Amino acid sequence: MARALMFQGTGSSVGKSVLVAGLARACVRRGLRVRPFKPQNMSNNAAVTAGGGEIGRAQALQARACGVAPCVDMNPVLLKPQGMTGSQLVVRGQVRGQVHARDFQSFKRGLMPEVVQSFTRLADECDLVLVEGAGSASEVNLRDDDIANMGFAQAADIDVVVIGDIDRGGVIASLVGTQAVLDPRDAARIRGFIVNRMRGDPSLFTDGMRAIARHTGWAPLGLVPFLERARDLPAEDAADLRAGRTGQGRMGQGALRVAVPWLPMIANFDDLDPLRAEPDVVLTVVARGQPLPPCDLVVLPGSKATVADLAALRGEGWDIDILAHVRRGGHVLGICGGYQMLGHDVADPQGIEGPPGRVAGLGLLDVRTVLSGDKRLENVSGTLLPEGVAVRGYEMHMGVTDGPDHAARPLIDLRTHADGAVARSGRVWGSYVHGLLADGMARRALLARLGAGSGGRDHDETVEDALDALADHLERHVDISALLELARPVAS
Image (cartoon, rainbow, N blue to C red; front, side, top):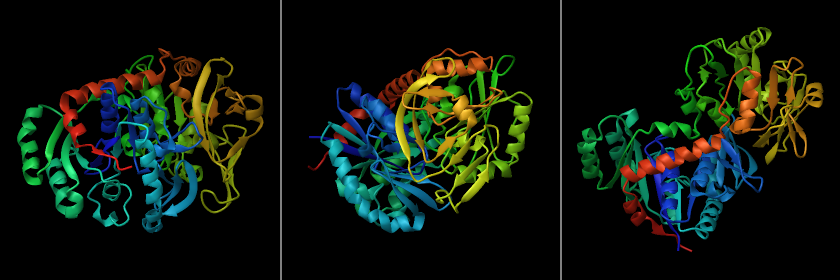
């Protein structure tokens, strides 16, 4: 019979996703069949499953840590923000429509049965389910009809471990305060706590761990030092990108300079991770209000709202910077929404992203895009043109891009169709294929066009090494045996 344990946090970005991935890898190495589960996620970083569905990219990473393929049951409800108050709702991998934040609070009541069904299906095929909550466990204003945190823990009858982040400060108050504001019935579900991202001498926080345990009655299950190797794992939140997840490359002669303008609706930005990991690449994420710096390559990543991000790009004056960059001989790569921005215009006749209409693109590729309600979700493979090296990745977009540059000079030859476009100059490239840069040889070929070198290592290997290092780290600093004892049998 499968057992399950839930990990909730004192807030967003405290490290829940990474800790669950590392614990999953550690438990798999102990001989357990493990599955990750997140009832509800909110992220524009998504992954495509084998059946043509989509889930949060963090759950895909956790599935990798478990040594299994991702499936839609691992993240049955995914909200993909499209503005300040609305999101695209994805249920069991398929788009259900658009919801506003206020409406979702009442709508989510009907989603709990589907969430529990997904959880039960996962439990039927494994020994242990590691469940990740969303945001903060202490958001009592969202407790009614909750499916993400304590509402799910009660419905599934599983216990909880709370994670706090000492790096941001106030971890004692955040953990003790979480217990203070929770309904006693919910608070009784919490059996222990983990303090994450300790910098410096861990012995300096021994009294802090005791204080938290004394005030809450929870078992101290781990004080986890900050792990630099965790930076090699894909981040889930755009806040991590803004917070400085930039390149590690060596500044100086020979370093390739890559600039990425930070746009509000940026999506699937883990496409940047392989560049960031290159030792001879310096990747700079350009904050709003700053001009694009001198660089060799500008990358426009994916976007959940191409029209809105085009307006934001123009509002920052980055369109002028990019056009000047190209005139000076610079290169540009657009991926998915970034590819759409590079064309003459983006038409939205059905009002997919807002009022129906048409907006001008940057005009750097002789192509045009028409948005539609049909979403393409597919894992793809092919060859990079003209080099002929293998490419693997996935498509995830609502829209079709076509035009002379696509017809004459596609960037990738996929098995079923040609993808992308290359400008006549050869210095502007666009593609719908996410993961293009993760393939070592494809990345090496693209960087060679810029006169830069690469070791040609597949980024998947870097991620695998980081997962193993994380599991080793958690074996040293978390009482995993105690965690396993807290896992409750899943009701059939």
